[in-house]
Image 1: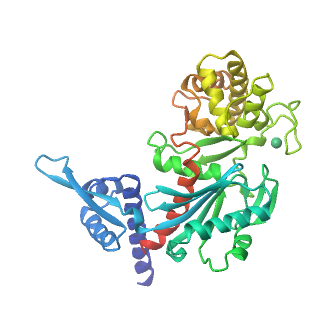
Image 2 (image 1 turned 120 degrees about the vertical axis):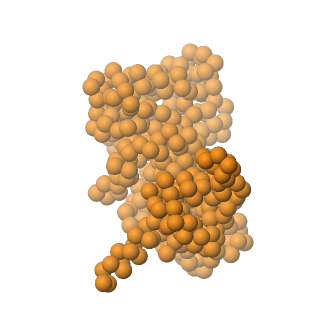
Image 3 (image 1 turned 180 degrees about the vertical axis):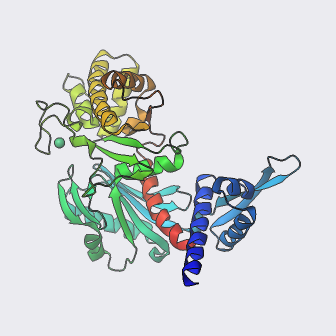
Length: 397
Ligand SMILES: [Zn+2]
């Protein structure tokens, strides 16, 4: 029967995808372990692995002792160079382009100060791609995958709003296509916080088995991403997770969005750096990230002004996080971006404050944690995964 054959085909595809993804997330895994993890018959696993080896997606790399005495297991991992994506991270201050690989690792090819004006940006960006990336034949890349600091329209590559750069409704793919007509790559664009959360779920064993969480991306401005039922929530117009404009004090400072007392007017790193410098002392560093690192060093050395400024940040962080916990009751909240380097004592203090503000809502299992990937790698790794997740679906067919 026709229907049966289609279902069998789909099931085979799904099994191949499952095994390839298990090998991506568990390098060194054996065939026997894969059968157990995937709940598949060992002979099915052997057959699928043979085909993945033939396609060059997976390689065998050495043996180790198996669970059973006297037996050896052959270790499997994905072949890093089986697919190479061109990836980029447009940051408010710096832009980087890189090569991303099938195992989600990447190599930076170029970095430059982000020109704030659109025309200048696209000209510099296209020039960098042509000079630094296209020596590797650009047709050999499987995609161009880009992390951006703002809102992207769902299903297209229109950047709806990059507030800290003043961009609105920029058709990224069309603008780049005009400058690089020879480029035929599939283009993906996504918000940096969503990509950072995708990277954490792939890489971080502390949260990879959890089903719901919120990633709070602290940088210039505050972004975020929400995971519910193992899926990232996009919302009606793909802006779910824009935590930066949650009101935490209606009489607070004016935000660039036109409202008062948004979360990011209290906890973004540029705000906190300015709050410290307004007390009279300047921080060393050429950008807000360096200055924020310097501020955390002062805090840990016991500097009184640094302590006061960070205590205020901690109070508002706790207010915002308590709102999220009350509404979503998530397994975890992760402080990412520059939040990944917040000291454990500071995070523990915020956690105690959150618990006080949410009596009954926080379970003993609730996890407030910092991201395992730093701001330099999280979004680029997420952009790599966005390209590779698309690639592997086609490659296993
Ligand atoms: Zn706002």
